[in-house]
Amino acid sequence: MFFCRVCLEEAFIVLFLICRIPYYLTLFPGNYGKDSFESVDMILGNIPWTNHHPIFFTALIGAVVKLTEGLGDIGLSLGIFTAVHMILECMTLSYISCKIFGYEKIRGSKGYIGKASVVFFAIHPIAAMYSMYISKDVLFSCAVALLVITLLDMGKEVDLSGDLKISYSLKLGVLMLLTMLLRNNGALIVVGTGIVMCLCYKKQILKVLLPLVIAIVAFFAFKNIAYRALDIKPESFAESASVPLQQVGYVIKEHTDEEIEAVLTDEKYGILCKVMPPVKVREVYELGYTDSYKFDKDFDDEFFNAHKSEFMRIWAKLLPKFFPEYVTSYLAQTAGYWHYGETNTVATQGVWEDNRIGVERTDIIYNMTGLSLYSVIEKLMLGMRKAPLLCILSSMAMQFYAILLMFAAMLRRRYKGLVSDEGLKRTITAYMPLVLLWISIMIATPAFCLFRYTYPFFILWPVTIYILINSDKGMENNR
Image 1 (cartoon, rainbow, N blue to C red):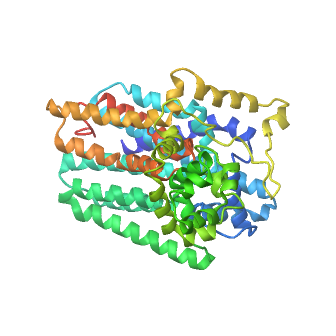
Image 2: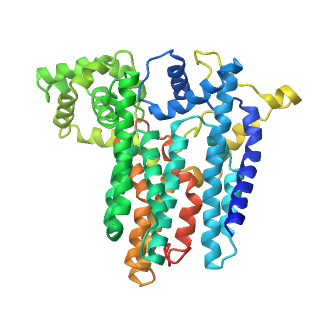
Image 3: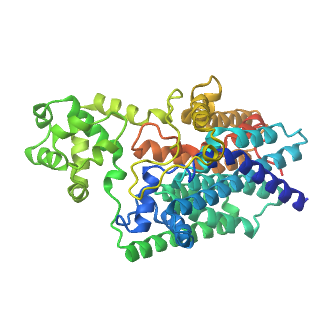
């Protein structure tokens, strides 16, 4: 049985990779946006190292670049990294599909959701494009998805045997560490999930608490060592204060200096002006998008970091007077994550043309045949965002609401006695990484609608649908 499952996983990996070859050959060396090239520039020494894009992710790219530098072509090295990236994502999707097949086999069902998940991952253009989208968000999403699956399996294991195997502790430790290493809000997700996990698995407290503690200690040790070795400065406070910055910026844009000065003291208004001149704020401010504001050359990041507590007091001081503006700004800043109709460009398509190292997109299929699939890929991506019903799959809000609906269905059936308290608690615990991810985005998102931020929701669509349909049993006795 084990070997059959392994063969099935390998078959799915091969299938997914074959379906991605046309994308890969059309967009070689892959989907590299501005953020991707910031990591590459750090590796090549063109810019100082920062943790704006997590050090661990940049180091992964660096390892492949260094191992292949003998090829003499940075574009080819990046193409090799993209291939490795694709394989890792396809392995994750294959594992998820096989898990669903396993769940359905135990129930004696015909495996419709498992089959649908394979088709979904094989032909959906977003899944294909993200497999070659070089951003820390994709590997982070794989780690989070595997963490959710592991927590679901833990619930089943405890329900059947009353205890946890040590293998679960090992999986938890590795996946929690990767979650923290691959994105800057990963620590919040892991700590929050860990607390809920310890409350849910009180009888197995040592087996869940130990990997949590080890992962957290290893993460901060790695971060401390890397910061010192690479002389990395602490992250800017602007990264975690995107929402307050947007709200204050909106007040500045919508009101005169005199109206704002009437609320603040001269000293506090002076601090506001030193962070960025109000006239410049009004010039560059975009509702729902912080980067044009906080990355402007006139934004004094060093001064802002030195006066972050004063800024937050200014933010609090302006709140009562300009509460409607704060609400408007917040809703605009977070719209994509709660409004079902909001979508964005989803993923970079090809290579960012303004990169400083001269990498260009190479359409290998066109060079070999004279035919290009680029326009087809563009239309497929647009169609997935706009087509009726299909657009739900790429709606970040709908992905989150599906989880809430799943919780509601299980809660309703709990009151009918169809689901036990423990089954409900364990399923909610398993989905805590996604819930906390959504909350962290709602607290500090720099842009109103970035699909990559919630990509774990997308690749767990089949699992969420499976549990929603079978919520009468939760994940109990489903092994």
